[in-house]
Image 1: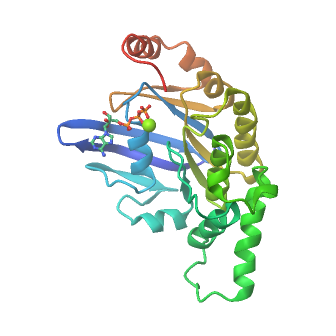
Image 2: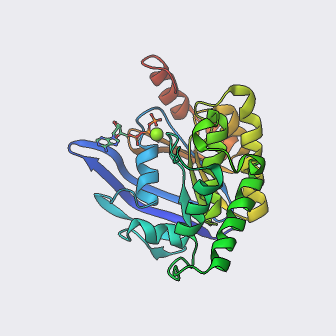
Length: 256
Ligand SMILES: Nc1ncnc2c1ncn2[C@@H]1O[C@H](COP(=O)(O)OP(=O)(O)OP(=O)(O)O)[C@@H](O)[C@H]1O
Ligand SMILES: [Mg+2]
């Protein structure tokens, strides 16, 4: 059995009276592809915000390899090796592709405290950035302004931005959202490859059930801020409570 790398204990986030995340116990095994699914508004992004330090919980704790990290400031989380992407594309459009990634390498690099940057160190950040761009197949676009990239390439750039910080845990919030469907398989393959090659742990929020069922080792289903079910893809597919939660939703609104 792999060790647990990320754990939440009874974590909760309330916005006024709304219990967006309501006592979630999550254990993510090191090296796993662990997906979090659930209907719109289930609390998936809020849970990511709690794990990655963007939000402080109302109650409960977050652990990284057994060490409590609940109230550490955001930059400490990043330096400990937790990298995350956003549901909505988030790049500096007036910088080049390479500059976007280099900034991240510089900011998230584990040794960025020695930032009285020598030319040599600067080169190293640039090399790291190029390697990350290579990994996502964007090296030949390094010199372009990020603003001219089509949406699919922006999502790849975001992956490179996270990879440049060399995180141990990647939290990816709907990485395929808004992509043309013919581009989706290549991105999914890339994510699987990144994880396998770097022995990384990936926590994935994704609405596309085909993807989730294919690449996950483990799936946690959230509903109304709580964990509704957890298991491997076959167990989740067969779970009646899960089917009900999704059926109930499709009567009200569409998946994004
Ligand atoms: N900053 C906030 N202030 C108030 N309410 C919030 C805030 N962030 C999220 N919520 C609410 O918390 C609930 C959970 O939202 P969250 O974004 O975590 O859901 P989600 O599972 O990511 O949904 P989706 O699949 O649509 O992305 C929703 O009802 C949402 O409106
Ligand atoms: Mg969300």
